[in-house]
Length: 113
Length: 114
Image 1 (tube, rainbow over the protein chains, first blue to last red):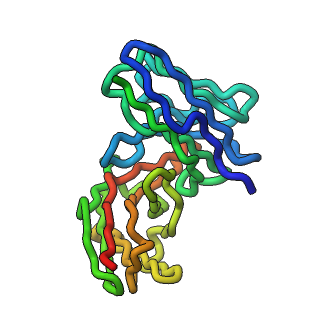
Image 2: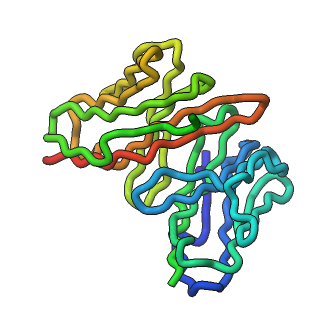
């Protein structure tokens, strides 16, 4: 089966610009996660979708971050405006059953200058 | 109480040796304890997972040891190989009121010397 797809793989933007990331989960996986991984740290959950509904967005900086999962399949994560501290790898993952068994995409490395 | 504490931050092991990474948790509501392996430029991948009612689980050269009373679990990599060089994350998962969560540790960067 195809894995979790993410694009772009790399993005460099200036602070205060906007950026969007795209994720296509494994077919049939109802749950989709977006994580932020800062260098040297573990993934930090930003938002969790169950089908097209939000389950948890408690750690999403809602003043600048937004995410949607239309039709319960692929998803986009947007940052507007970006800050220097947003430089990180943004990982998308999906699961079909329990959260402990997630399948991750390759991530998007964002550099904000 | 939601944290998973992982140690060491980094580990260097000779080829053929045993690599040991330790994790501790506080919340007894966690009901699955997975380990993820991440290579540079890749997303994490599930390596092995254990339930708290099992004291040990082995898959090939990878073994999870679980101590429920101490709220600790560890990953042992036997006969460590250079290809095992990666970052390893322990995690804990709970399913409460249909809100299924996973909490990751901060990771251990493992380097196996050839």
